[in-house]
Image (cartoon, helix red, strand yellow):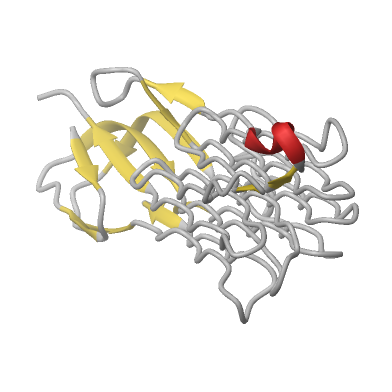
Length: 252
């Protein structure tokens, strides 16, 4: 099993039959300058293959980085970078939206921002089977969740409650079951006692969204899992997405 957490070269001096897992970098969470609430970043693309014939030849492996979270000069989270191997590419996740802005369409879409920003479309560019899902829509005072490999990001279930990140997918190519490509949770604004509520990220490395006025910062997507970053609010910036990974397995 070869696990690439950074870009490199896969050397196979003889022909092999391989299985692979390719996960793109997750998108960063959104937030508007000032006090706008952002959506969670979408997960990086999730693609697998089995019993693939690989003639002898060195091949480039590209591992995509996570998208940047939002700082004071940005409005929408940065999208993740694609990972690729042997002409198969898993796109990066879409950045989370911000005040009046939609999440970005990518492998999994970013969650929409405050004031009913729509979630970004998933499986962009389209492949079969799909590499991800759409982000959830934002609400009056909250951001939608970023999409994940298994499910779409959550919309805003009530005023001020951020949407949860879409779930990722478990894979055992490494020898143990690991879940990859979860979406980031949207930012939450719930004044009073309910202000402690936090929108969780999806299973598979999605980061939780920020919460105000409880003072909870957004959480970054997990590195080497392709998780989306949590959406920000107020002084809490959107969190960056996690980097992707490429795993290649073959009989010894």
